Image 1 (cartoon, rainbow, N blue to C red):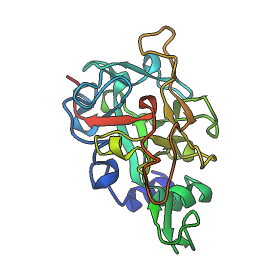
Image 2: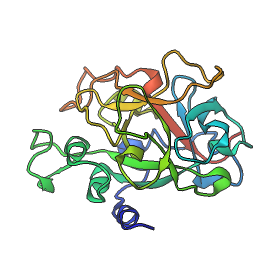
Image 3: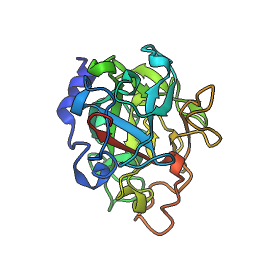
Image 4: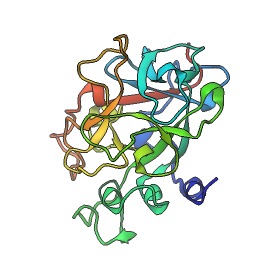
Length: 259
């Protein structure tokens, strides 16, 4: 384990199934990780555009089970025999933890992982608010075996940048931040936008998105991408202008074996 990995493992301040932030988004449902070998420790992530916690229908999948850098990440129909749907939460904590480990920039931390006076004198210009969203890496683990490859982007996030397998624990490109200030109505039903940790656009950050013109059964399979969020981000305080995020940018997850 690298120094950065150890720092993250030690610094993780919350789990994906506790607290208001991710309690809904990554919590119990009727179906989850694809194969029995992967078991209860694995997680399946799905788009709210096509499913719910009770019936995810299509889940995050590695195209053709390819275990290599730059392999596209898609959505595919749920199955309990498909190792391409096996993922683990590689590292978890808060955005501030990932900043402390050197995996996200100071600008990202200021907007999504800021604790007043530690180390910033104020957070996004608002000294009365701490902003420290949950963050994590999602590692491809076919049959429960960690691959060292995480869901991410190959370059700093831009509009329509494809989501692919990338080395875990190297940079913010494989970090995903749960944007808990957006879409509160859907957040507490278990769905959140996920900001890529390499984001440089803080008014409309780049979030995990299913292509608007795609469907999981299309050929060739549409690749997940990062696009500008469709709603408002990081309002202070959260207000009625939030809650406009489209379903193809809202994500949920469950743990266990897919039924």
